[in-house]
Length: 117
Image 1 (cartoon, one colour):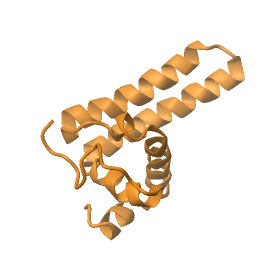
Image 2: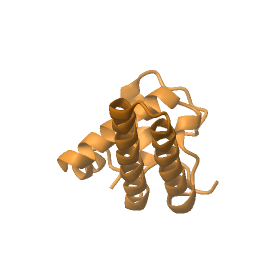
Image 3: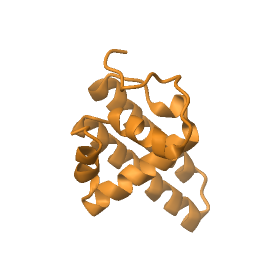
Image 4: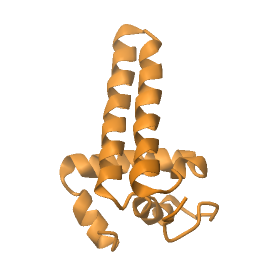
């Protein structure tokens, strides 16, 4: 699909810490990361609404909002395939880590540390 991270999608990773730089390199554009932050926020709001109300429609909102936003970011801005297709659990873990770093203001430092931005 155009630009690809340093490793190919089918590459095996020995650990999450090995996967993490690859994941961030697949999110090198600020626009892509913003779409992920939007999607993760929608997912958390949807899960919270479901827990409070018990209405399953909020789970649908969480899934559609989170994956929809992230995938749009990859296809429109990053021009690559989401890592979730190859590594779904580590991708979720990495997305939550990226979100936490974004909220704390430490994401740019992590990107610089890994030579991504």
